[in-house]
Image (cartoon, rainbow, N blue to C red):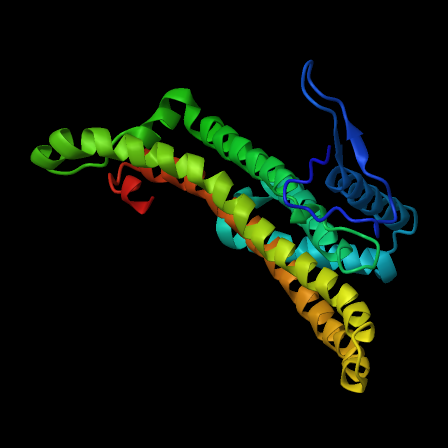
Length: 273
């Protein structure tokens, strides 16, 4: 049984699917997404080790590439978190690198983007949700965290009949929707890229096997289109990695900002949600 979660299982993969142990009574599962997730992680670790062993004051090659990516995430983190960014930088850099490498991996023949499976994306979205709650509780304390679900200051005739139940409900819905939104946005974009590349891989065969000289000429068209799709896929891969990471930063920063505004006693921090 395949457990791709939207991925594209086909015989062109260079690596076999990974066996996933099943619960008692459940069917066994095999997933290419897990295989290529481990491959992406292994590649990142390998490049990091090479960079560490060849570390130089004037960066070159792999070190220059990694430093550039880390600086991009760090600059964005400082713009969102301010001085607090260093506390969360390792988490967001790791997430950005994994998503970026996973997205780009699917552009290579015989490889699959792990992020074309919503299972992979949902796991990362859950990690973001946990980080968000942890950051809020760390800064506010547990009692302060519960104030997220308290309605903002407003006239009593609005607060008690309406906001007293509507605000907590909206906050709970917001917390639930965020991981789903992160999951499906990344999944939809990367899955579409994988579908286009797969279609273009088989179109030349279909055209070539069709009778007629025009069909034979058209069999070369997908190769030309594929070049454009690969460039577009590269752009989409970079943008989607950045979007996922930035949104994750914003979710965590909202929890911290809420605490700071409440502590200052302005009374309008909750309205910023």
